[in-house]
Amino acid sequence: MLHNIKAVAKKNRPFNVSQPTAGMKTTRTFTAPEVMVSLECNVHGWMKAYAGVRPDPFFAVSGNDGSFSITGLPPGTYTIEAWHEKFGTQTATVTIAGTESKTANITFAAR
Image: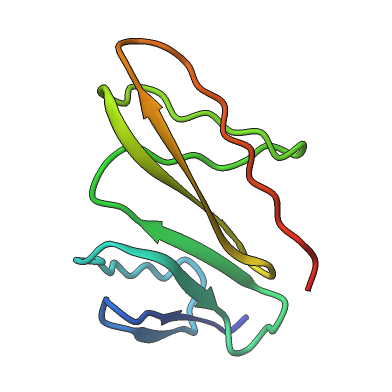
């Protein structure tokens, strides 16, 4: 069954690769940080994904209840950015001292 992978990127080179053969593989590399890169299949409209391209290991995917945890941050002040496919981006600032844990509450309002 024909598929194609289309990356709709702004900071990285976009691509659109057809995969007409079962098991066909292709490799693409994103070189610049970008949140989010949309991945689509032009043949099957329901096939969609997003890739967050990060320069560091400090990210999280929220659980079903919306909770998330980012561990290993060195002490400092950080802006946490939460992204939602339909509701956009929200930010919160958190200052971490030593090995303490902090809570940031981020709320998305329906448009």
